[in-house]
Structure formats: C-alpha cells, structure tokens
Length: 179
Image (cartoon, rainbow, N blue to C red; front, side, top):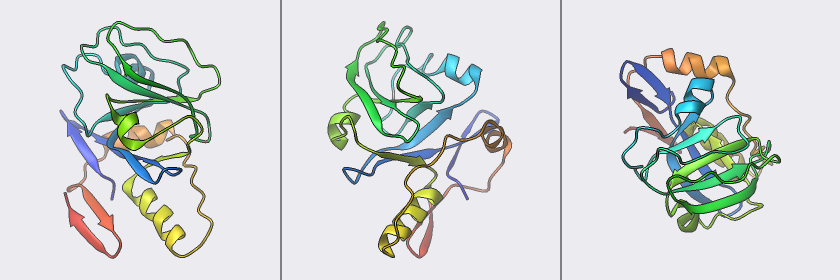
C-alpha cells in the first residue's frame, strides 16, 4: 500500500527521496508533478514549504520561482536520477538557467541539500516506501540492487490520484505500522 495524502477530494501518492551515494534521506513527502497542469502550478499559491514536502517535476529542464514567497533548494536530475546540478537557497522571483542535460527537477525546502550532504554526481532513489523497502532488502541480502526507479507513468499517476486508500502504511523490516 502506498503512502498517500488526501488533497481535497483527490489522493496523491507520496514518494521518498533517498540519496544512495550518501545513504541519507532528502525528503519523505515528495509529490510528483507529472501532468502539464501540475507542472504549471508547481508550488504556486503556497505561503511556505514544510520540511516534509517536496515537488518532483517530471519531465523538466528547469523551473522558476516567480510567485513564490520563500526560498527553495533545487536538484536537477538526469534520466538515471543522478544529480547534474544543484541550487541552494534559490530566492523568490528568480529564473535560473535551463539545464538541457536533466530530465527532471526536484524542488525541496531550503537547507535540504545542505542537511543531506547531496552533491553533483550523487545517485538518488525516488520512489514509494515499498520501492525503498525492496532496495534495502536487496542490499541486506547482498544482491546488487537496481537503484534506478523510472519516472512514474502518466496512467500510474492518474490511477494514484483516483485511488482511495484506507490509510497510509509504512513497512519497516517485518513490521507494518500506521502513520
């Protein structure tokens, strides 16, 4: 079962962002902006960004902070979810240069990059808690884990937003705990 957040009358699947290279979490509440409207809206209308929320803009070569009232951290990722460029503390009303070598952009609360130690060249794992559990199980059993999770398909995103789930669940090892 996926971790889901109810926004109005739709359900959004939340993903986790994990830095495989540094073995540190970057964010536990990543939402995917995978539709044209979601990419257009982005963070507009937010007064602030909580420490447990982030937006993964897929596909994207760049973002802007016009209309924002707070600074953000930005990670530009290639198709294998490797960091190709970082911007820390990008202030409001800014338009950074487009990065043609990136496939997606992860918008994070300010200081997320510093706190996680993320640098250019690091490999990230962005996926559901279930996908991260599979990664850790493979590492624990000594198997070579495929750490690349492809961008969520449009139909998977649409299905995730329509799905109504009983409640969010996290699975750690052998236990399942409600959030």
